[in-house]
Amino acid sequence: MNQSISRGDCEPLKTYVTDALAEARRLGASGAEANVSVGQGLSVNVRLGEVETVEHTRDQGLAVTVFFGQRSGSASTSDLSPSALRDCVRAAASIARYTAADDCAGLADPTELATEFPDLDLYHPWNPGVERSIEMARECEAAARATDARITNSEGASLNTHEHLEVYGNSHGFLGSAAMTRHSMSCAVIGQDDSGMQREYWYSVARDPANLEPAAAIGRQAARRTVGRLGARKLSTRKTPVIFEAPVASSLLSHFVGAIRGTSLYRRASFLLDHLGKPVFAPHVRIHEQPFLPKGLGSSTFDGDGVAPRERDLVRGGILEGYVLDVYAARKLGLKTTGNAGGVHNLMIDPGPDGLTALLRQMHTGLLVTDLIGFGINNVTGDYSRGAAGFWVENGEIGDPVEEITIAGNLRDMYRGIVAVGNDTDTRGNIRSGSILIDHMTLAGD
Image 1 (cartoon, one colour):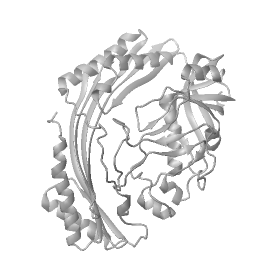
Image 2: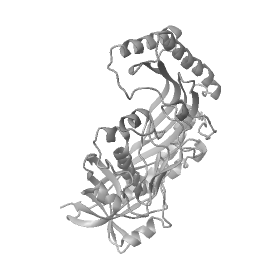
Image 3: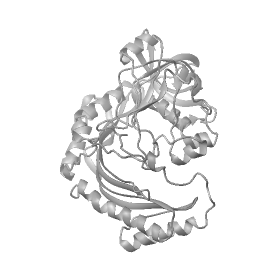
Image 4: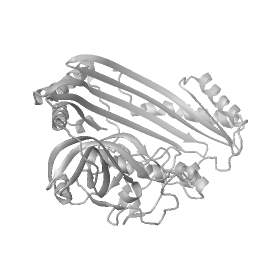
């Protein structure tokens, strides 16, 4: 792998941005914004102990948007030479001259731009080298295969490491930079017995490699989850309580974010349209953003518009308190940006006092979902229908694995029907959730 990108490399990136903005001004633009980034990474994949791929990546690019009044044009380039940069800005200006005016187009208001840039501890470059990376991936897969004799095959193990620098600036004088790293390791294996074959996986991801789970632990967890699914059976159609295990529970919050995103709202394509200030979740539910969480995978000091994000509740006491808006969507809705250009920042649903074991006892009898299949979500109506696999629970104890079932409901009812949230919070993503118990859903099977 190439030598690690350093924080100091942000300085020449700032020059690219300021040069692009200066060229836009020279061309007569009333406003402009530019974003430049560089990144590099290493990806290693092994299967059955043999190296399948070793991939080095290095990328760079600049994107610019220019405004002539309320007409705008955008262009991008991966060539950062002075001539290519000028050509990119000129292309954006040419496009802008032929576009229709949009009264919502334009930069963020200067008063909304970020002014403080605390160190969020997001940059932990790691260069294990190809040989050490292969060794770790092999260790991960070998641990999985040695866990149980019923692990008969493997889809492989992988190690990925990536570094990324980014600078955003606009003609209001804003110039912000960010340095980030993201490292991950994963393993997927196949188990087999007289009942047939099953596949499962496990992974770990972190800004800091020191926070990754050990390679062998990842492999063993992948194996245990695979073996646990052997002997899966179908279920008959019924209504039943459902627990979404923490790794899949975050998808419920992803659907919520999609429904309160500005683009869905101004297009009137959301089942939560006009729900601000109204009950949306069960009364005990609180959902909030934590943009300044150290080492958080969704942490940032400014969003894609240069706006300062803030810690805030989106749901408090079950009531919808805020939307997810960038500058453009906010103007379309007659509201203020929420600093969410590019998405939410470490969205979290507050956990209750109990773990998954206590949630199973509370449910007593029902379905524990550990895997979801397909994307049967209607964002306009809230109708929910997805393939699922997991375990049938009797008397609070995990019983037989189940598969080839469909769980269905409506997200409005599902959110209001949240009985409890576990304290087994999965922190491996930008959306964080513990296991979620829902009072009932329709289970379609045989």
